[in-house]
Length: 303
Image (cartoon, rainbow, N blue to C red; front, top):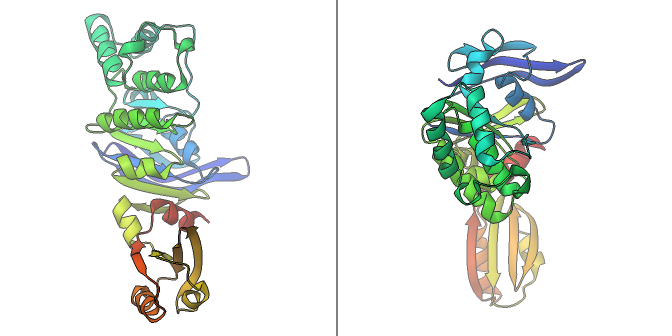
């Protein structure tokens, strides 16, 4: 396994940030690491990358212990922190050459890796510019390139798409997916669509404890909660009639005679809605039940 976190606890003074969490990851796996602000995500990532020591428990990366073998751990990890630290006065290739040399790369091997990273991270058009003149999207690409320059087995990304525009987000997602084909990627974000788009597995942490660890589909399928039904009518209706059905928690108009109905999941009310529409001569144009989204599940587990 690439990462093995066993009974990890981190305490700051009297504040317990993370408490007795355990998980393992495998190569070729992109893991979404989710949680509300202050849940312990960044603390866990910083400990895995040797920036912080664990208070209790053990963490190994590619078989190396973060406390006793930190140099070996760092050799196997590429890290992009939430606040991307870059030397703005350096040119892109100059910076990548500097970072590569810190990892012991030299000569033609280093030059080849720089060219590969420039292409992989979509920096070809900007490669002759200073980092300080780049947009935030391109600076994030440079951050990914430095994290990958030494070809690490594990990639740790702490909210890598924060502040990017939609086009940049899609491009960075693709870079992460490409990198994740052969590496272990732990990917922290607050954007659930990103997790659904690129992650094989989701770990949700809340108040320092893991509250879920599963695939996205299994998490959505097995998490109990409200069921959302979207109904479209051809004209206005009396919402109080539907609101009185057993199991209905609320009914909200979305506009254009379309309504969102939330139920407690104990009863499938779709047949009753169809019957009511027929009884009152309400033209029924659409009726569908929506699955729990990852955002729904996240709220249920961390509220």
